[in-house]
Length: 248
Image 1 (tube, rainbow, N blue to C red):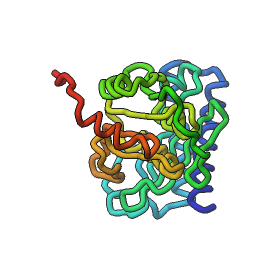
Image 2: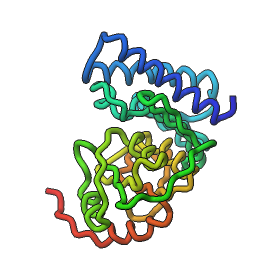
Image 3: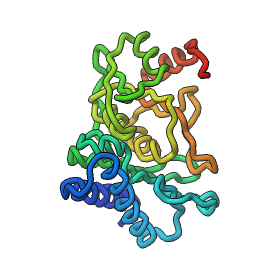
């Protein structure tokens, strides 16, 4: 298998494990999310050790070590992105399998098992033109202040949704036009989605316009913007001008 075939294999296999576990009925709610994370991660790590033993790996569910920092190629995975949604029986959760090469999200596969979909960076869909009014996808439980303010300025509709991967793929699939997040994420939350979104021709950056970089010693990557390239500059300018209350 080449890298993208492996990424799809991993995303699909983990998704099937998770669906089978949920259908079995032995767990529910938070316990289901915990069990799903663990079982999917064990399988993913085993597969990567078997197929790409020389690559680095960063997984949300495996204790991190400095070994990956010296590797050019690093797989960045999230066995269940959106454990709450997965545990609640919803469809807006994902499996992320991405690869960073020299810090850039070079390829990725994002499975949406509840929708029986896998999107990858080798064959992304054609992104439709932005809708009118624009649709800005946000967390269904804690939409960020920046996102709400930008939506107001754009007269855009807020579209609540679960996991980061589901939100990013909503933009790729044309179900939303903008994904603006500033509430805190880690590299595994967005590496694979960013790889797919960039391959689809979408703009992806931090909310200050800087590049998203991966395989850092500190894996915290708190914010991002995914949107059509034509909207990027106006949105970044709006964010820069926002006056938000200081946390505290």
